[in-house]
Length: 321
Image (tube, rainbow, N blue to C red; front, side):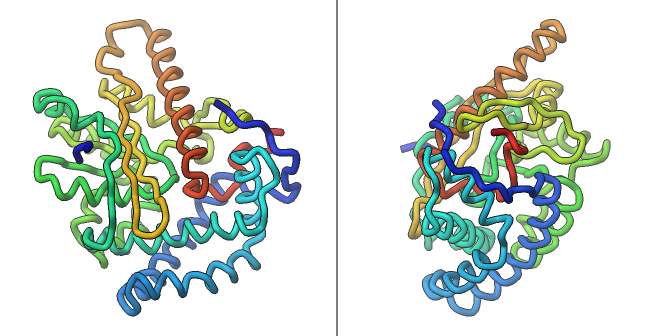
């Protein structure tokens, strides 16, 4: 991997938005598993060009039947555009999601030749070898494709990248990844127990890049309300607390889908907790808040840059006006 503020609120906010992050995560992972199985069949049977055409009727059916996803798509797009979203824009949003899922199959199978991937910024690789010898956290989001970042990392022998996921999600998605590419399944660490934290610590000691999608909070997980697209939204504090506890730098990772076969990778340094233990607890909390604020501000930037790449189809703002 080597390199070559808020919009105004929309006047129309759907009243029917009611799905929570936890409900969407449970539904989405079940749906995602089924969708990925279908995508594997599509991809291997028809190839990428025809599979993308066949996505149109699939997405049309989904738009007609998945009222919650359509409502939350409209809510998000209305906020990112600063006006009421159009039906065609909602369709494009969901089609983009389906396209990225389809491409996930090819990324997992190592079919890099099918894609035009441009690394726009890579602040991690810009550091010297000594600075890269210690592990770091890569904070991503349910935006664009994390799989394209993993595919690029696999092309570099000296990069070790692992992905942290909630235990049930890791089990389901890992099983499918194992069927597509066993090596990809081995890069997943399931959160939710003490052994996971020990594994993370060991991987960091080996100099690994530890990736986690940090834009969702699940259940009773502690959150911070931060402005996103002009309205406060809850963001999980856990990933950043983990980075502070492990005293590691944090980089934002983003693999944006630009249409066709084009992807764009951004990796930016957003925080460094290497000296977090040298200060008081108060100072550490301030560092965590500052890191999260920076993270959310960059999510907003990329949401405006590539608005159809946001794949949180639930009431992200939890009813905030």
